[in-house]
View 1 (cartoon, helix red, strand yellow):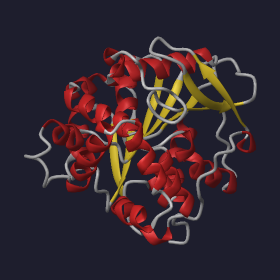
View 2 (cartoon, helix red, strand yellow):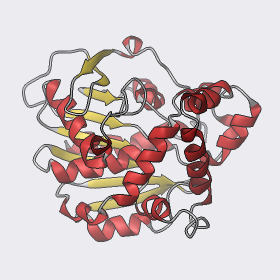
View 3 (tube, helix red, strand yellow):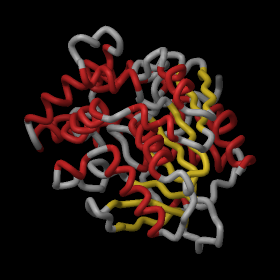
View 4 (cartoon, rainbow, N blue to C red):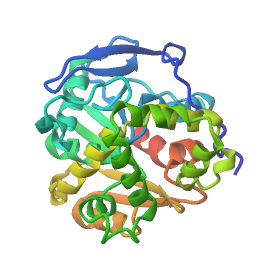
Length: 311
């Protein structure tokens, strides 16, 4: 398809019509990009939650696609999750849970003037979005997921050796990130330093269906946004999370994943469907773990546009 990976990463929020704010939350300050207009009464925020080794900029190819397609995405709120991008990792270990991060996102969105929201979550962001839907049923209108890391990742995080064969790419990355995390800042600097190398592109290639067609800026962003300690902590917290909480979700949940996704287990969507009352899943062909980067037009048309129409 012609739309594969044709937009790179953009880091100029102002050029995209977004303002940058730093919002205090109970677990620390969160940096967030958001629409510049005055919040209208009864507006529903469109909250985008990025995955691990990402930040707000991970969603810029999807935003550029929306602009190119003439799709209006009002009331955008795109935070750097605590521990990622420009948002610091919470100092207290108790504040690093999935539940605490979701609560911090809710605090940010409310501080910007919204009391209702639609969530778009990728990978780890999907995990956080599902928790936020449980914790905030009245405020959460809809959840849209792009390759959410759920049951397969949680089980592998709990038993990385025993479950290595289930998600080998994730298991391998978890081992690498745990090793780099033990190196502290040197580990983070090492990943950032090799971001432009052929070796880094090769190691990241399993994440994409057609790695050679992915814009160089995406690989650089993956390296620059890598946070080994945050990745290791998020994996541990996902493994400890009580997944049955998702049975309490009352809003519609829609999900797509790539047919070549190495971070999502084959049975994840079926397990979500067994828990979430209003769940629909689907597969995007020719896509790895980053559908909103690889085939943003299809993700926009299949996932986002129907949600905007229904809102």
